[in-house]
Length: 89
Image (cartoon, rainbow, N blue to C red):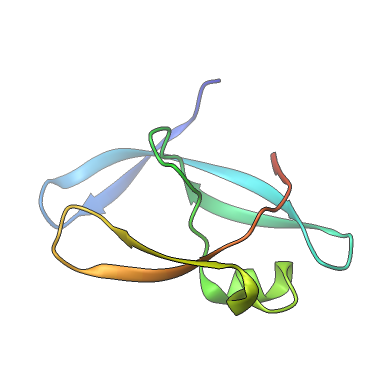
């Protein structure tokens, strides 16, 4: 699969190219919801979405499996993991 790259500002590197795509997610109501400008991370174990989008897709985001994730920095982020259907638009 190939992705379009978009110029983006980076605090560390100035202008960079980043792969952004549009996806669709199946909501709790059985409707496909479009989500624009999702950053592609082909090495990620899970896809992270903001809480407000999660609340559209599932009844209660806090019913998912709770996990702590960590990136390059020392801080951890509490997330709730759900299985949802996605389509790459």
